[in-house]
Length: 193
Image (cartoon, rainbow, N blue to C red):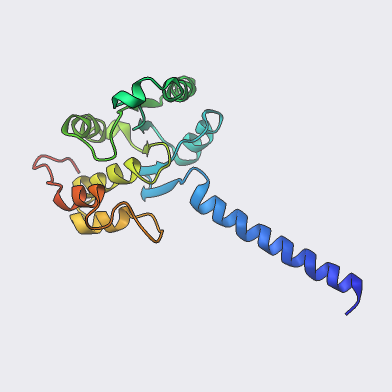
């Protein structure tokens, strides 16, 4: 085999490898954006403030539920949390008609967090909604599962299975705090559909 042919094959392999790496990055790491309910609910990790408008326009998002925030004593003293949250809030304020709701939550929601979440999700004027946390695989997935149970009629187990991010170990497995929360979650009697 000639040297030119070897170089060409090497280039083709390198391009194919780069395309595969990009696809994996795009699917799993590019803000972990995912459709929960087409045209109604999406979830993600943090989207940089300068890219929020693109997602809002593309998916016609009317409300953002940001689950980040200092909710425990060790996080209260971390100004980086508030800097990022304030930057996002400032970016959303520049987009006409976009609602921004910051509902700081632990990994397993408490009743007051859920009550605030229901208030947003019960209002049809807030849809489509983007739910996000920092990484998009913890709190955003939990609240997306709650949405599916409350508003889409999913069983607890179906919602828990859908919440699991495709990895070897999931923080939604049986015996984990988030997995057990979803298994034991009790649907409200007055949920709006």
